[in-house]
Length: 291
Ligand code: G1P
Image 1: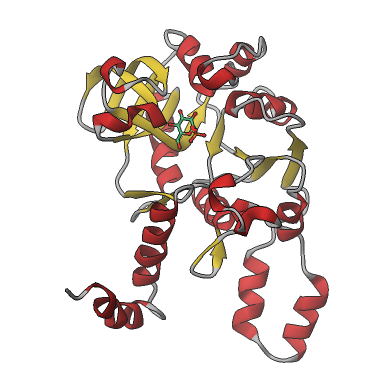
Image 2: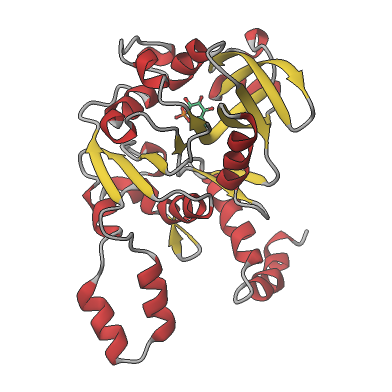
């Protein structure tokens, strides 16, 4: 029997050094794309995929992320009194239902694999999703929903993958590929951040995963990999052969919002999609790009 996918882990302990000084006193996951913080996009996408329970893996100086998902009681009251219905709705949509979000602390920054291992009590014996809020996907069907569908279809691990230029394989977890139907790719091997010449392919993982809880067994020894960190990719590589494991070429465009150019591109792409802003942005953009 395929267990339902109801849980998501959001690793949010990273320092966000690439966005200093903006991230000196704020979490990088709170940086807004148009008017919503990155973390909100992840949670909304997860909800659209049937996720009901969340675990944020936070770190020192990240408490505002916990505040963010709380009910802002005083603000709600003020907005209600002033009849600001739209703002009130936006505020309500941003809080999570009671008891559906927990946090654990990653006390030392030992890598993504370690962050996931810190959520082991939350994960228990259930399949779970991982969402890296830096990766934003603009698509018709929310990216995690596409992954969840692929999980129900295959009954095993599924990671979201994109082709990257060979020169960039050293930024990603990269697949060694088996059978490939153009959409689902059988995962035969996984390497974290291989040098271009050594990469088994150019098909790379982006920050959306659906994994079986057995990954925790492979993380438990906390073995260090690339960059001296406990790598999730290494633990996933050890799961190959245990059950189905696929890469999904999802429909949509992925923006790396951990990168300044990617973040700016996402601002424009998301603004253009918004009925309230799109026409305005479309009208002013040419002024800045005209030769
Ligand atoms: C992490 C993972 C890597 C994955 C990437 C996607 O790397 O370790 O396998 O391809 O996220 O964004 P990071 O970007 O944290 O270095």
